[in-house]
Length: 365
Image (cartoon, rainbow, N blue to C red):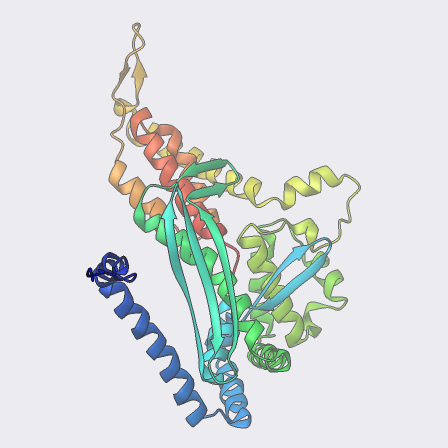
């Protein structure tokens, strides 16, 4: 009787086992992630939130003026005011509500764009909301767009875009009535510390005058005299001023035009025109000082077209001032001086100007 050798049908799986062994690190990471999720859910169920205590924590946080001032954003859209809880308020509510994990993670970066995921997970109820989106490495400005190469700029762009999605995720897992109560408390906090004194009103009128808004237009919007203004109206005017200052709207979006020539009123109310007027006045004053005190150093052009006695341009000082510009008005004022810069440095300064302007133009969270 001949011996029959039967092959093991599972021998083909040996190489695959070897491959599995090669992915030991990935398996370990996966097991660790599963263990962390299970531990988080177990701890949350062992320590359930008390809604009353959590709500008290949220309302107490919203009673802080520093949080209340940054808790609500507003801007004009389609002829109406759009407002809502900011990312700062959403984060504060999530921390006080408890048993919530939230964050932003970059899944992939390839082809000049990042794949990003924002998520919020209520561990106690196992309610999860996540948003996966693409972030092209491009900075968009009113003067055009350009690609981002600096890793720091890419990180800031991803973080900014992710914060807006993160806000939506957090608000999706926290009950809506909790959010409404938090916003109401923030509004009450802002109203309680609103300054309605005559000195404060004079400062407000002066601030709006920079955008071509008169005292009469302000009184017409609030439908009363400034000396009878209410704290809630002060809060509303502060939000409008912030919108004008950040360039998110124009004066005509908020105040009625009492003049027949709307084109002239638009130009008068334009922040850009106001900044240009200030820059022109400063240039004229500086030019007068130069002509009076340093006539011998005034630049001249010879017959060959060569500029002589041209003042030296301090590139590092100009770059530092642009990067540290606190407001859009100051940034535009600095931009007026770029025309005096040499060709090779002016391009770099214009790039720095666009970067800083994009940072100041970001919509509030």
